Image (cartoon, rainbow, N blue to C red; front, side, top):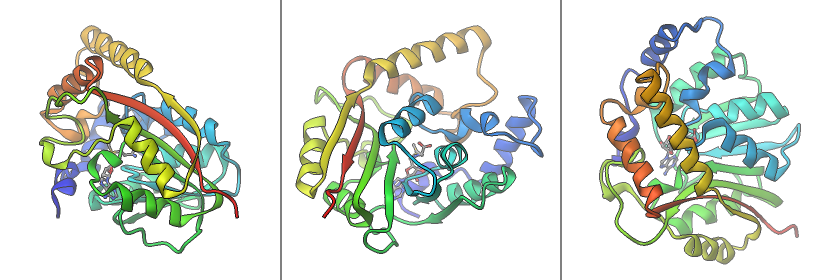
Length: 274
Ligand SMILES: C[S@@+](CC[C@H](N)C(=O)[O-])C[C@H]1O[C@@H](n2cnc3c(N)ncnc32)[C@H](O)[C@@H]1O
């Protein structure tokens, strides 16, 4: 198991999620997408950010979508149920793939959503396989960006869209660690917005939309912090995935964002049709 997989591996994740759901008054034998959203949309602004990105690429019934670094598969399940497209989720963390499959079966979405363990740097798919390649908050752990965007381009059909929602480097000042994607700088690789733009163009993508969503991220953090002050630790949240040091990770992430050390970016790019 490499350092990134170790960072995300919990050991008892499925049982912990089911126990937390029960404590929150949910019926684990009859779960809904909404019940899981506070845990399985594992990125800043959760489901709202997923919806906005989906709208930006006009997802449609019958499309084949690859979700790279899919985590527990929340965005894949949510969008497959909403739009009727087929999702394949690929993730490096074996435990996440197993839990993603189990949650998908509980929701009866196995017909539209499947998962596979794999590395974004070596996608186990043929050229031109997908209408959409989708990725949220996964590239921060991946150092070889040329290979990463090259693989995304290779597996997209000509004319297909790449949908990105990621954390990027901001001012150039060092980050406060730990953060939710890395306890140490050794597994954190953030390009600046200019670097990402250049990488995508050099890979061959046309940039369709480019939106800095940092302000929305900051106000989401402020709302969450206020809710936690009022209600105490929430029954369902990312602390279930990341364990005891999650509060310090969340504080650092908010500070990094607030001080401009990181920024949030939503990007849509297209592989030219030829
Ligand atoms: C913060 S989680 C985001 C999960 C999901 N995209 C979401 O938004 O709910 C980051 C995920 O990226 C995955 N990841 C990191 N490096 C990867 C790689 N080289 N290949 C595939 N997945 C990777 C991790 O295992 C983890 O599940």
